[in-house]
Image 1: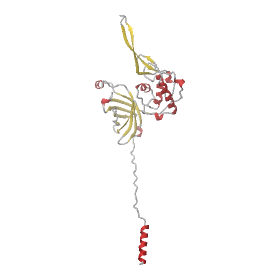
Image 2: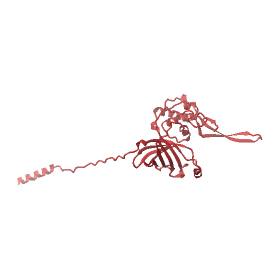
Image 3: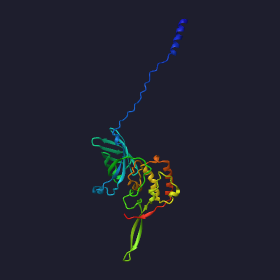
Length: 304
């Protein structure tokens, strides 16, 4: 009897001490599938003209259209077998796109994402370092010029604090200093003709800048109140916005586009360059903004 009891106890001890073997858990690691990028030599910024052609057909079709030339930049950031990625920048408006590249035809079809009423589709032919073609708005009723021609050339962009406006590269007019042709002020004038009748006519004057815009560089020197307190309002605006232009900021206001798009160094690459500003530039921007708020404009009359 004692022998049987001993056997039972030993069996229970062995059973309780025995470790249960757990099945091995295999961890399956998900390997990231890398999509091969191609045509990396095409990556970069292409900048140039963006406009509606002034043809009889377009005049009849879009009588109220804007036929002026804008400066457009397209940046290609990634190209794969199936897709092309990047963004466009014009008039301060930055839009992402996705599209395709036909190697045989050397043709890009780039579709802006359509979340903005002004979005559209680019069809561009690649020839050496140029992209030429067209842009068509998805919803023509929301865009002044729904069909535009695109003429772009690949450009390198590098921030350079030495970039400045120079006389003769602001606009192709006789005036040596910058003039804000977008904001004229009209005033009625009168005279008495030979018959004794009073005749009326209108004179338009425009904001003009001084030579200071060619001399003061707010990206390189710390500005003082004494240095800028007597400057014209337009002077201060140009000196301030030259900082942003050096960083490739795309301006919304036509006034500032007129000043910088005529230079050989300006390349619009982004609608927000705040993160790129240097401490010196930020300090000068604060000072210039404060003085702009109460500075006066200087108006002159020009013959055009």
